[in-house]
Length: 445
Image (tube, rainbow, N blue to C red; front, side, top):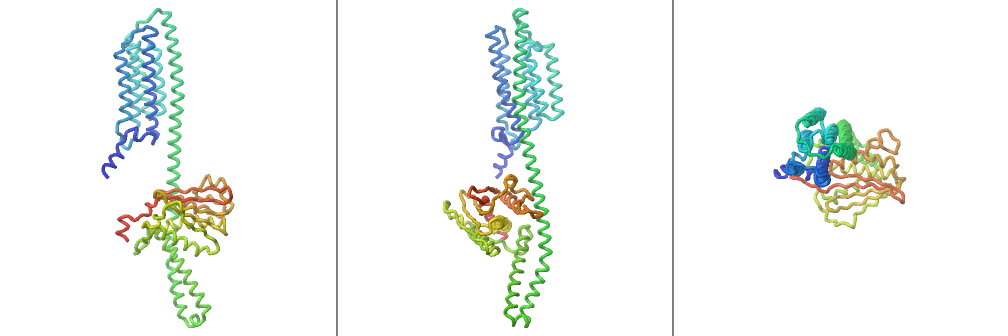
């Protein structure tokens, strides 16, 4: 376990590439540095061979080699959770500025038209870095530019006329490089930032939905507690009535009392299920069953509440049925959300509802199908959002909202679609291991 945790804490950029905006932005800087290395080697080669300008090749290629080592170090250095901080980006940009300054020092200093490549570093820093870091980078580049005006190795240039033409040509090349690289990398970095903002928005939405579920759970738990006392009172009263002569001697009245007792027991069972889902069941052992028995019991209970609906329940023959014998916990919350999906299907298609169950590679799949009008397009786009319902009832749409969130907590997912031949299909998928019996469950059971 400790080895796994250490691996999770220390990841290289290659191992965790693209997971966060910081990692993606550092990858953009590394790609830019590779392009700079290629461009610098090409420029040095053309300057010496095509224009015949002598350069200190040993020193300049040493600087290029340092950039290559910096890239490899940035890619392979272990980081805590693979995260890239502001300090990492600042250090990388400062080293890029230092390398550019060294190359300019050996090639004419501030007289070199490529000195304006400093602007690209400053622009990237303004986008990627925190405010104080961006200002620090600006100050460092300004000092480097100023220093190159006084300290540099002059180039042995041809005549003044050719020098002017080369300088103008160099300014043109530098301008094209600056604007092209700025557009390419600014566009990519902005896309990374937009994806990060979208992920943060999704996390905030998920937190709000979970908070909504907590409030609903507290309300349901409170109502269940309040209902417990009157239901117990009704149970006692009905038991007394059964023993009274005027009811005991009348078969018709006695049967009605028996039916009423059955409904009271059902209400108490529902209240108990609510408390179990809220984690407040007292003094009861965990219900251990098998996956097949869990589904059979669920189907039987639902059919008793909807006797007029024809439920077509079947097991998917394309998968092995060994999963049905797997021991699982009878999760009342999962049972309730599956019943919610079946209820919605029955409301849309009162005559027929289909339920298919299967398991492939440890992934339990439940498919509920109906022959109703299907989902409205706007509902399919916002499936699982609260208060998205076509029934027109106040507070509607909470059923699928709870389904999506309960499945998500179990590591599963919900997919809904309209069928070409009419009707709708909702597919619930979750790992069978999410219902498996753990050691803590066995001790409590």
